[in-house]
Length: 382
Image 1 (cartoon, rainbow, N blue to C red):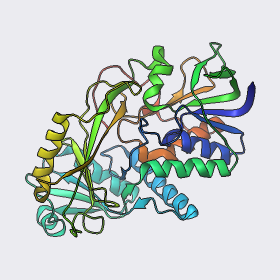
Image 2 (spheres, one colour; image 1 turned 180 degrees about the vertical axis):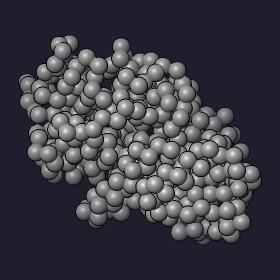
Image 3 (cartoon, one colour; image 1 turned 120 degrees about the vertical axis):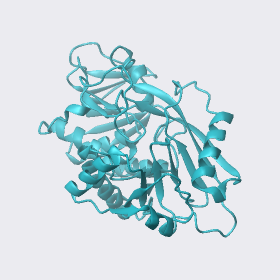
Image 4 (cartoon, rainbow, N blue to C red; image 1 turned 90 degrees about the vertical axis):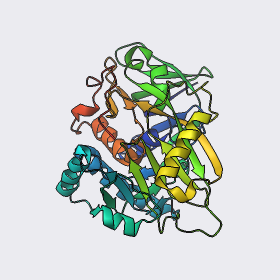
């Protein structure tokens, strides 16, 4: 059985969901396909929470896109009357010799973002939960916060379905080998025909396109941990504590949302990981590292109980810039991925970018191109 559409979108994570949604708004017929279903446990978009921030060093494109995306996330949640954004504020830790911090200040000023620069003395007063150690200053974004990721992506998919997309749980096996792809084959032997194909498969992209992406996308094993707070203690809840980022130390934190505990995410790139068969049991070494960092930053939680732990993955480009470009051979195939641990928040902007290029009026961003992707690791986007 063959079905025909204007666009086939493969992958119902945050990039694929928003791309399908934005393409449907242009009047096209769209089918969204995912091998396991949106928000599944192996997906990079399947976790409970993600930080949405505007600060991005000197990367003004991502700061602008984060601003636009935050407004679109909030508009969608308002439409469905489902509050999946927590305005916790986001605090970026800085030191005196921090070039990325200084570049961030310039970018935030340039785009007119809402932020404050807090000296160490003010940090100690406003956020007494923290031991700031060598931190001398911070960037605080009062309007930023935390998205409830898995549920947020499901809302996008459901809204796209309401607007008329076709949504299917099915695994794509292959694409045609001609210069202009005409169909994709599913595991049940059926085919989906279309004029345009968008592959937004996260860590499965290099599996579907090994020749093009195996050396350009590096999938790594990442661990996150949730630690319990004392009964009745509200100082680690969103009203009192922001989401926070310490990139130099290689980790970030999210306050206790919905009683799940305070989240510690290890941002240092882990070992290479297979999203299908990789071991998803959190490691003793990861827990040790998380506890050590937790004790240094939030000393009152030094002996906190571990409530949950999760293994996910980053799909890293060589420098952290996203991949959003046409396939190097198939001119009607788009490759959308390389979230590199920071891409989730940008889903609305990514979807709009792809839709504008399918429409033929988009302006290409060189840092997102396939040609810019190298095979060595030199992370530059945080």
